[in-house]
Image 1 (spheres, rainbow, N blue to C red):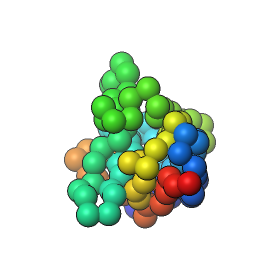
Image 2: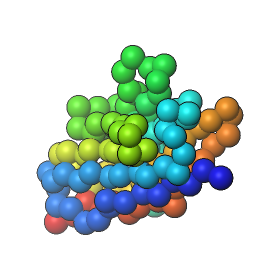
Image 3: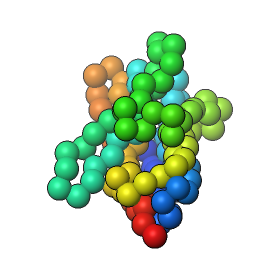
Image 4: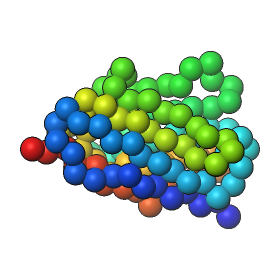
Length: 116
């Protein structure tokens, strides 16, 4: 059973930074894709960043390009999302996601609130 556990969310002021972490129970190189999604109140869940061994470069939502960076640590089975220049529109629950052979796995989510 695959488990994804997020951490690192919290309250941050506009312009600030946070780094989210996702600990995977499996070997992350076995996943076809890994990424981060977010869901704001009253909105649908949306893709934030996606990475895969087959991608030359990670993929990002237009709204976070040049501000967010996704990275992986294969040795630690971790995936990270570095978020800089945060603004109120980034407020949401952030979910770690993985796909392996057509099966989707989700973490429980971590709340990110950007407010002064």
